Image (cartoon, rainbow, N blue to C red; front, side, top):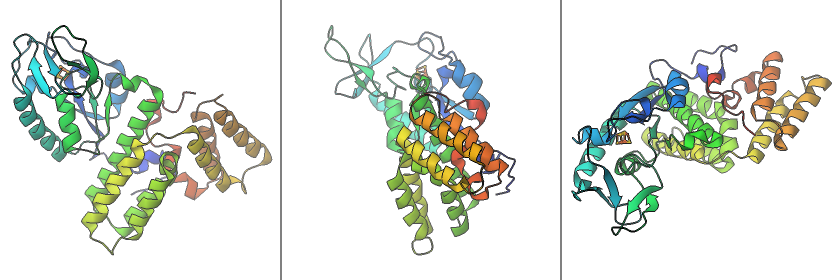
Length: 332
Ligand code: SF4
């Protein structure tokens, strides 16, 4: 990894050959593939996130051969909606969707994805709370999972998944974007070939980011790193990747962020001036009290770390885990 202190931390780990690659329900990009020939273009995805990722659009209903326009399909039976059927004539599409979806997910896995953005409420793509219909005239239950989303869960269990609706929620958006950029860095590391030195550097650079999500997982990952050379590389790879993904599926809390901020602050205490010390302590306190967003103490710390050239802290991805243009960490 070529290092340059002036470069954003996330960029030092980025490799143009392995862009952040996300699967997406094609209608969210504006493709006119819905049952009625319409689309559900989502401006945040196309205009903001789209500037920083490469999309792999998928429309399961079109790809199993249902045309445009096509009859409405829906979930029926069981809590999650075991059957996928045509609403009007009850034609059962469950088996054909399952065969297609499992094969498509295996193909996507081979491409190397960092996450998937799914269209909410769809009996094919919806990730949760999709309507499951029962007896005619009865009220549908909001408990279903779209059949393509189910296949993603079966075939790529650690892949970060989100729906476009949930991405309007700032903490969920932040967690998803942190997860996809982190997974991408892991993919880059794995593609270049793991060595003890590269794994140690990776683990160290993610330390504060991981601590903000789950301290216990950070320690377990440390033990995996420590066993390098004593157990098979494949085992190291699989166990580190699975636990690493699990950490980013856990929400980062205000209390854990405060711990991390204070920890980082601790590395600066001997070199900052009294005024700087007061300002950063105040920014952390204001964040803890919910009066300023996380971006305030983090930006101040980032500035001080650069100004005082604190090398260890400069390498922490926590300070800038993804491009600033995504405007994250700015909610209270
Ligand atoms: S929700 Fe999924 S299946 Fe429906 S139009 Fe969009 S991409 Fe196609």
